[in-house]
Image (cartoon, rainbow, N blue to C red; front, side, top):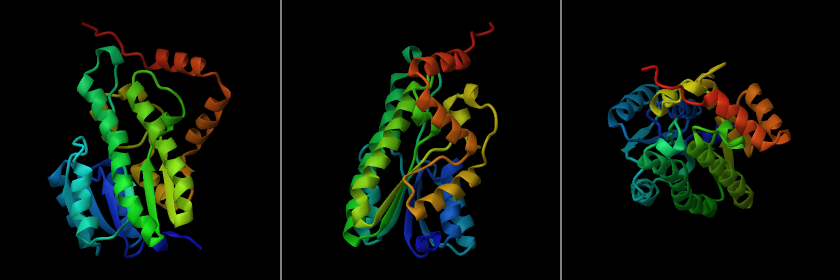
Length: 266
């Protein structure tokens, strides 16, 4: 029977491992005996996390890299799988967002979301999944979001990229299953991380904020079981159901009014 014990001794590549859900996923995989390859932009944070996990007995390597650069996925592959390290677990976690009116936002920030949240996921998966299929084993976790279930004004591009991630994971799951490769879309809601501050999305930081450790624990367990989609909290599962029953125009109108940026008081 499939369980997280299957991860013991396997190499796991975790992108965006320097903070939030990425860090929590790395810790959770290490707890189940996986060996870690950690990648993110911030080398100092990767080194600190690697030292923490190594002190607990995990084998860890770091690959500082910025997935906004489309050549980086190949570089990561060359330094891992291409160098004889079989990556059996790929965690596509790296991502970014931006809050604000689309027509006034910085073009580069909008495009960066597409490059990191979508293009890098496709590139990394296309590089590593064929080797998993050859070995007839592997796991791919794609971190999407509850924002993937409906359009979300003022994080318009982010929500669209997460819808891409969820659909990509579900389609790939159906394709890869016959090769022994399991693919899961993890769809967290508001989670304790740097995301809201970095994206400037405080307007969406309402209600219960789920600990990243809970998201990671439930996500890794779902990946081991081969679940195609996991929404790690009840309110998220309920909202995902409700939005399927409501007109999209109504949902976006309500969200637009609630999330609309407040005028500058000055």
